[in-house]
Image 1: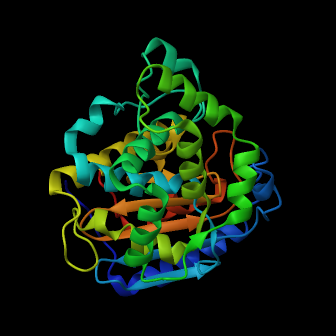
Image 2 (image 1 turned 45 degrees about the horizontal axis):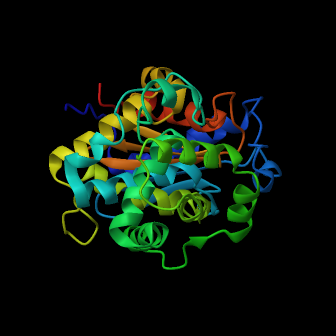
Image 3 (image 1 turned 180 degrees about the vertical axis):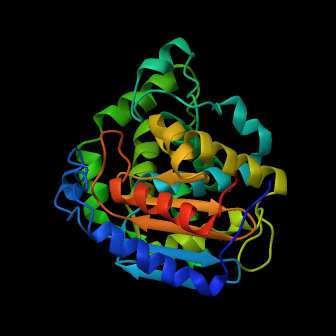
Length: 312
């Protein structure tokens, strides 16, 4: 993979400051997710952005230290944690293809015999969390410990309000889990799985935290302490699935505009990876109709345009 670069490390902060100024002048930031009541009150004009280099240096602007609900961004880390444990066997239970449908769609599961199209739609993430739960006995706890270690922030935690809100409004996720269980593609009791999944999605972290936690993917599978979590090939697999599936049915447009592996969450965050160089996280709660942060996508688009950092 060839990475074109025209930006030195010291130039990252001026680039971020320029992007923040441009975003501030941009009208129309989308709307926060309203199907999770605890997220609906977030200010769509909030904005933060951070870049983490491979040595742990972090640059940020705006609300980059403000914790927010990571939501589906956490799916990247559970995928990595499970892939590290079971390897290619995982891909017998979840696919690697873009869905072309909304992230919580039930449609494809029936005609694909309970095998989700990819690990980043909700059905696929439920399968991955289920498999990690089987292997660890506490998938959400395993994820939280990993994020604390990689971010260097031991204060990271679950947001009980968000978890409770998702539980109270989680009928569609329950339907997905029960449907897959009918095809024997779920091992654990559905209520146990849903509890783990909602806790996982509720983790609150800042742009700086998540940018740092993602650097193992830019280091081709090497964690911050120098130990290897994923093989180089597995890290490539995760980055590839992020590029093709990480922003749901807008993945093609995201690849076209941004040109980096990325993963969004309905809390308004997006992480992105420049393999061999750095990682990014941007947050702004206003979403487009596909569930991606309007300002976040625009900011990442500007970052790759201004720096020349891209996988293409």
